Image 1 (spheres, rainbow, N blue to C red):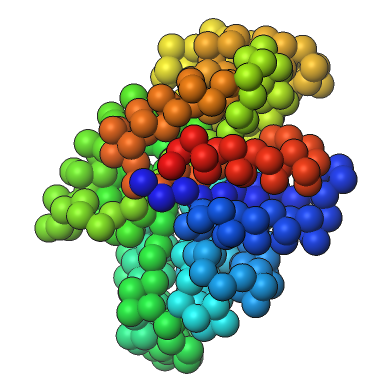
Image 2 (image 1 turned 120 degrees about the vertical axis):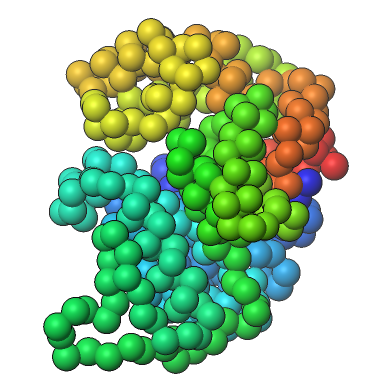
Length: 345
């Protein structure tokens, strides 16, 4: 099982671009196989990966993830091909449907038919990356535009990799199956090992629909990590970010992370956390998170405990494990990268 490092979201106190670059270089030196940058309504992952490409040598460069509503699939293909060119073949393109808060509040599009849109997006994206003329007709997308003056076009720059890896971020059964059918990898955010094993059946069903197996397919859970002997301190360090995901990453009606917590047996607690968060009581929302829920959705605590959890991810079928960090300073994050690499080896 390979290790990845998620840069997560920029903008935290005390960490600037030079610090984030230093952490990526540290991860590369420690043997992490990939680095990933997130997108909400802040930094652009594609721009970051192009910048990092010239300052690293081996580490794979992933967008984790680009929002489908934020750029057309042909534009995502152009970005990925460019990163692949400037990095010598190290690009990985992670995409996802996001949720109504970002899609409707930031991009001004309706959050409708996400599975159909994802299918069409991946279809166009794959066509573009292969260099074939992009002629596509689906439920939500048609290219070239019918009745228009445009004709079929092909991507004018080729990726270095014969098949540039495309990952789909997915949480539900249908989108996870779609990842198995059309993508090269699956980004599963906050999934515990047991839930990962359950969703693997959806991946396999999607792969079978496409007439293929999961051989060579990258099952890549993304999880918050904190190696800390003081377990109570570890829980408290995780609570702010987890409360943000369960309370604020989505709308009151549609929050996929909240739904995940509910499916893990914490429906009442997840609802209470969201209600407090959306009412502006973020501190209260953090303290409402039970230790068991923090345990289920993150990797935190003593090294021995985390070593067992990493083994559980491996047994559940994970082929990559992507770590996000919550410690606030460059020194502490460097230390966490080292500690996690040691226990996961």
